[in-house]
Image (tube, rainbow, N blue to C red; front, side, top):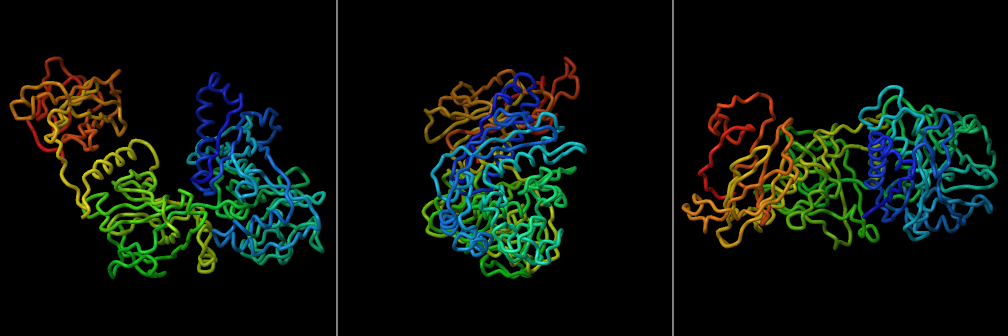
Length: 618
């Protein structure tokens, strides 16, 4: 388990639940989205608490004209303590390794004071948690857009602002050497080699832009550099800082970036450079990939992922042979293998279908699997039987394949995603290789080839299907037919009926789960008597079920009804059965039969008869 953020809402937010429930739902949803981003991204096993306010921060009003504010809880350490902690912990990426190498071994400030956010101190192992990180507030006088997928003109991105302020509570702030006070981030603040402003990322870095450096000028523009060799984004200009701008924010020239000062039309996303900042502060970041030894299908056959090279052609879901653009590499050992965000997921042979995957497939928890036209991160498919997270590993090495665009390829006979740069490239040990190969490539939005699903009815439907298969999966990757018999026979908005029978235990009634549009709505015991079941030889005939839907299902949307035997989570035959919405008026004398409407379609109010099919479920 990585970072956990405990959210506490101030009374100003609680009041919204009463005075403006819609605004309350929008605000709390945006908070949860921002929090979830950091929890999914940061691997350090620490717990922090942050207070969130509306129109105020920690009980104090937010200044007029300011969209959001943070208040960071902090402490003081010596440079020696800070340096030793960074050296001991920052070793999980090329960014961290370069950052450590750039730091002086002795205090460059000659006795300066180093402040550190308590959350960052916990990440670096200087203190033990849980810790109180600080507070965040959004202004109530700003027009907000609550979803980053639809930021309206003239509004600000609430999620981007919240991510900005949370990063400050986690330690993303500078002190600039004022009164000889510094933070760790100050040590990654450099001038450009030519002393100019607006130099392009990748340009040569000059000296650190701090008062302890000989020749320091308070009027020089400064940039973030994690290696002391090349610059990335430009920080706020000295003039803007003098006028109240945040010294640790990007300059207005950096657009649509969560860590920037400029609030532009459109979403303000956390960028690769933003994550590089968090990385040097001691936060280890998650990435999705394949484990060493995974067989990838190429135009010349199955090849272990570690033997692939840039330019090799891999086979995609569509059957095309596409060239590899880049291969990311990363390994974990020691303390990181206590973290469930990096421990590998093993998908047993046959977990998805007979022979799929063809061998056990090992991937990282965030690696998405393609199932029925959606992408699902492997961690959401864990069922403890056919898909498990392996905890007893001494070291794990991951690889990820990038094509010119996001796609689905074939790994161990299963469909799985390629790499997409959602601001995670720098988490690979060879991230600098990409920059060297493609120096002129600008930042591109992360575009997925299929919907990425992490919750909801579609995910639960997949989980149920795979769990049911897992109980019947043999060592050869083939699932045995279910011994259970039964059928979903009737589905209406108010009533669902059918039968279920276990020949191996005829005296024991089956518990049946009723599912509508992917969500379980109830359970019922199949113990009602039906003479037709008894006559057909199904025990004593007491194996039917009838489920009355409490309040009835809404009739304005199409309902896909499924029934599952609880014993092995196997869907009954006839599932799913569709109940169409009320789109026509049924005449009182109209009789509608199953045959007239087609298989599995029963309109509300229609007359139906029992199906006489007594097949096995599987």
